Image (cartoon, rainbow, N blue to C red; front, side, top):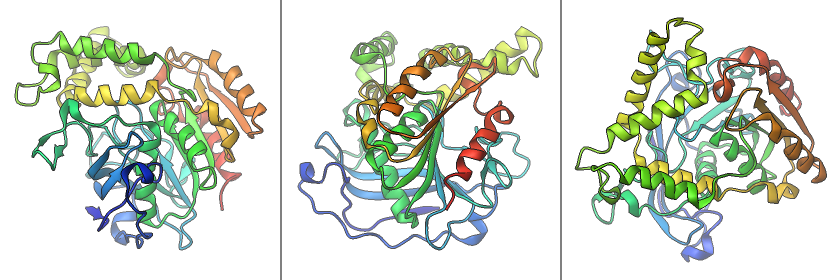
Length: 383
């Protein structure tokens, strides 16, 4: 199902840079009742805006965001929760696409009727972020000006651009205020960015297995590009008609899944190492067929430039900050500094640590461990 905004829509953060005028508020885009009130069969949707300016001063002729919704929007438009996803994952956060599908969304244990993010109470929007490879405008998208993929010429984007695109989507859906923004990893970056960019629009944020600023610097981006360039198929990023770089992407994904804690998660159902290895390889192969390495470059560059901590003083939302005891990417040692920074900025914040062996992947599988804290936190925000 596609939703489109007619006319020109300019990014709220870069109106002057693009030399365009702000469009009038769009009319809410109604969702058919049969498609919005159940998680048994989730509907894939897209939203498109036009002439969207970026913080860099460049503009996207078209900005499409893939998204899903769960639950119903209240008449006053104030019962919504935005769920944001990780660096290389999709926006399929809950439910299934067809009856009998065994693969539910990555936060399915947290989102649904009677669950901590209760779809009997909240209207939940999960949006694929700008630059990602799961249906939103990204380097693999066709540039209307050339009729070819943007590829390595895709403009630089920032976390502010990403959340500005989400704001356009929410406006079009008729959302007038967010109860919360919640998400893991890169999704936590987005939650923090929402809190500082739209302080009056959101009541609470739940950044999970994440931090309020990126790490690695430009050197991390250059190292990623060098790795891709070592593959003969890379061709300076113009790999689309050369078969891509599947072996490099496969190897990268296997490393990532192991570092995230996938071996420990699979050990719960696959006791034999050989079985776990085969499953990790299958998961990595499926991902490598879908994810564009240029998207990794664009999003990695956005992440290393991200810094919401310097703007903590703008935050008016309550914060529930969640880390995992065994996460090697965002270890619990980050918590004291983050919580101290929030306290000094006068932000009401609570810290929860997931006691798990599952590292960076803990937030979904360990929903029973920290879900009650999430439910209690949302209860303090609910309209």
